[in-house]
Length: 602
Picture 1 (cartoon, rainbow, N blue to C red):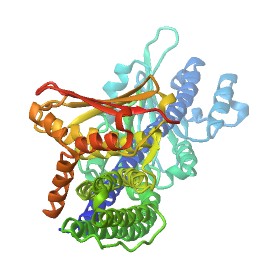
Picture 2: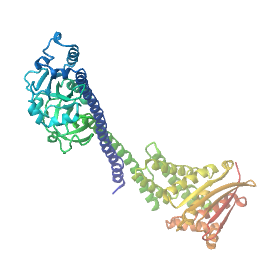
Picture 3: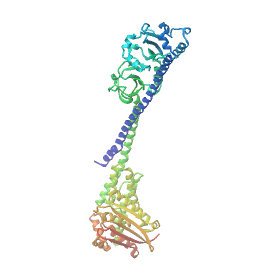
Picture 4: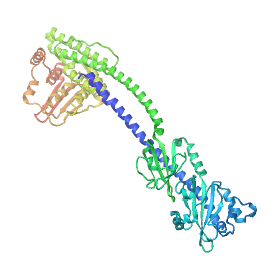
């Protein structure tokens, strides 16, 4: 697979796929968040409804409590004419003070639809005494009521109200949507059980409660139900499911009395958020059902636009990436091909210079380097008497092709891995090396030499990440000193290529400097494998032998490895004579220390 395809696949895998995964995760989290937030809001709404419903019942409880406390119901049970106790049909003139007060309480609660009493004691009187009349309603005879299951429960509550919802006991309350209160009436002095009060109220208050919630935007598509412990829907605000069983519409067998909870499930075949809240002290639960499509439609619309915009952005980014990466890979590929020609001995190749970024610097550096190499080779050919000087300039001015090639290969690998910042850094480091290398002057400031050395070490660190560590410790006051270009780099290169060859530990290189009697003393120290006595003697060979060795390697197209240390020895000897010196201290297995003494010149 070529580099272009690798970069494209890397872009797909490292950029596009993570964006898609991030989008899917974001939408999943958002949907979950919507479900949780709506469940919380639904619980709050159901608690508020529960509180309002309990207030309605408590108001009616207070009304009947007042009637019991003032003796209105006890008087009605003792009245000679039971029909005269109907407060809705009596005139204000025939009523006593307590009856007038209670009647005003009844009329202040227009939701009260019907009220009557069962007489428990006097069998000779009517068993049913009407308090607040209702047309087209026939109360259950006392004999049947006494056999009914509610009778025992009312007696057991000993005067506390028992509320019945619509459709729970239609034989007792009728088929209308009314809520019924049943409670025991006791005589005030002896507390004897004298009657049972039955009061029915209309659902007006409930409609008002649910209507106020429906006006809120968050509840427009929500169905509110009142369900008893057996799962019977006793009240549906929309009057569609009254009298039905809740389990008929749900996908599970959850009973409302089991818990107060919220969950996502199907209701009547549609995905919905279902919330259940138990009404304290009553045998009912409030249920809210909200369509999931209603909750998520805005997010889905946003999601469609998000996908569309992200798609356009990705297409644009892909086009840019392909064009940009094609330019990088194309330029690197051309330089790599030309470097292979250089390795084969063709020094006439040149790269077409185009662009205005670091790649242009790389192209210019390559061309300038090749021009310099050609110039130096021409000098070697035509100036036999100055062979030694010409050879030194070749070593001084050129970046070895194998080093440049390997560096470009490293940049290529980083580009494949989509490491744009590292690619840029490597190109800049290589450009700095090329820039310093192609300078015409043979002598440069120590500051530039250190910069060149640091760039070289950083590139080698990229190539051999776990092979070695380095440290540069040179005082600032020495940085303006003048020395031969590429004095330190060959010494460090020798440590990396030869001193660390085959080691099983982390190599360390320390470059330090100090002043001594108008001389700069530069030291390169490593903990590598060291040099043998034979190798040290070879370094001290004569310049003639040294030049002959270089030419033999050039004629055979061999890589000039191992010559760096010797080149520094001869260049210092050639440039400074007896004023410059190089000392080597080494022992196999214990590393090498190289010291250069150079006359200080500002």
